[in-house]
Length: 406
Ligand SMILES: [Ca+2]
Ligand SMILES: [Ca+2]
Ligand SMILES: [Ca+2]
Ligand SMILES: [Ca+2]
Ligand SMILES: [Zn+2]
Image (cartoon, rainbow, N blue to C red; front, side, top):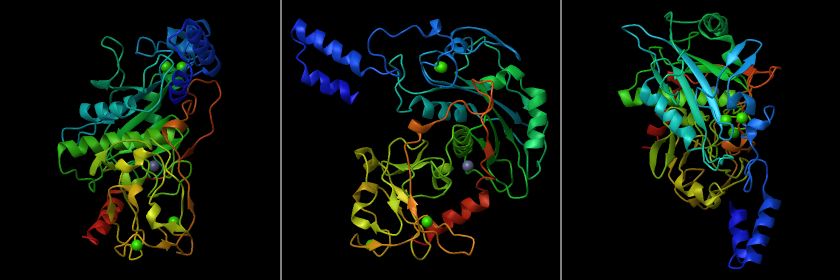
């Protein structure tokens, strides 16, 4: 709303003439997302998508009849003028192994989306995440149908788990929901590696697998955090985000997002503390690994001063910095005087060579892709998988590098 603030300064509103001039100017700058004057009734334009959440206005204004059946998103809390994302999560659960997402986990991830720095046409901020995970759910109104349910327990699905996944989906997911929902399963494990999940990029299907014996949370709070942040990570793939934001290069120190493996399970470093679950909410500057100026740290908006980061030193240890705008000692020699060429995200090429490149990042929230897979459309968006995710062993290896510095 910087534009509005500027306009208010530029025009005197003490006189009627000033007021008329201000309104005229507002009409000129108003765009489709932020109607300032006389918002059109979205329900009168059922084919449009006023809030740009991928769900047509008509589907959010009342029940509709689709080829697969009747869909009533309004009853589930959808609004045509505020962004909504719907998820159904089924889960494995036995007396010995309870993989159902906890209420705390659902509340956390819904809170992360509610705090999204996005303005809606109704003037509110954020995204309403509706998760139906059976008895545990969030933003599903009382009395509305809940369809998240328990599925048969299997210790381990195959390395390519989607055969199993789609059999479960065919049995436990109402077909018409596929036009509006992301479908997820909290399963035990797949393959041999204990990967934390897998998702389709720009699709509407994902799996969270934290049941491998390698995943040992230190507390109930940590278990809920892992479930929530992994859900946010896999859903992020459905919403078009990759491990480096716009691309799949992982561990970029300037990519402050739970999509980055450096932050998926512990959260981001913000205000000097670990544990903020969020997508990248501001646009940090790109970093050129061939020419890193320590004094500059990570440039970008003031908000970045609240964030810390981690990177890979020449000796492969991983230090922590708590204010990325305040300079970063990339080469880990104790000063901020150097300009270096260094592989700060630690990635290696096919011949084990360090990959030096421009680490390009973006503001995740501004780049979400809502109509993944068949959502909101008749034609499916082409999708590809994220590939197997970080394993408990990967996480331990990464954390062992912190200790090298301490
Ligand atoms: Ca919509
Ligand atoms: Ca909506
Ligand atoms: Ca230095
Ligand atoms: Ca690199
Ligand atoms: Zn991933």
